[in-house]
Amino acid sequence: MSNIFISYRRDDSRWATSRIHDHLCARFGESQVFMDIATIQPGDDFVLAIENAIGKCSVLLAIIGDRWLSIADSMGKRRLDDAHDFVRLEIASALKQNIRVIPVLLDETRMPDTDLLPEDLKLFGRRHALTIRNETFRQDAARLIEILEKAMNQEAQAILAGQWRDEITGTTTFFRQNDNRVIGFYDLGEQRKIGVYVGMVEGNTAKLSLEWLNENYKANAEVALSPDGQKISGVWWNRNAEEVKIPLKLQYVSDEMPVWLNEDNFQPFNRFLKFK
Image (cartoon, rainbow, N blue to C red):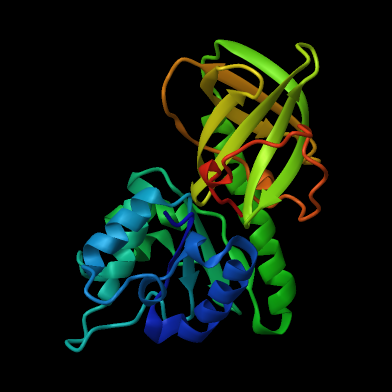
């Protein structure tokens, strides 16, 4: 799953898009950013790969240069008027699936007038855009990353809402073994140590499980972090597995790993799934 999908025209914004792509990968990781040839493997069906990626992404960035609207095919027909145009398909698919679409205007490019857009892109013309200029690229890219973090966190927190059987709160600690990380959870009220195993699937989607370390009791949990990344709250219920989305704060915790709460540790470590 790629959380950020980059839609662009090669003849219009290839170099600027590559630069944006590199900055996003440096922040979120390469697996979280989809940009056609950078993600699609040789032999993959290009159309199916794009459709699948659109359905799984949290945000679509539409990179718009000064020729995005007017680029034509070999017959002189505007590409955007072709119902099979990849850029049109990408944006229309995101709009249809209620995926957040953010227009990114390059330099002095203006947002296309709604009257010049095909019917399935009319809503796109109403999206508020962000401008990235060559001379202020670093500042503009930093602003884009800030917007993406906020958007993805909001989605994750909304998905975490549900009907809970019970609730516990405590303080987190972090432990790393063989490049794996887990979240330690301590229930102060019950004086029982709990391990919340966080296995990153991709992006901000994770499979979570909750285990009492001193009892033969296992259940699944959803977790949420406070803004400072220190407090954690969890819930448990009676299903065997649950795939949820978690805020970016949980993915990008500090590399400082305090001592694990349970001095006896716990095995086997290969049960822990990686997350970044």
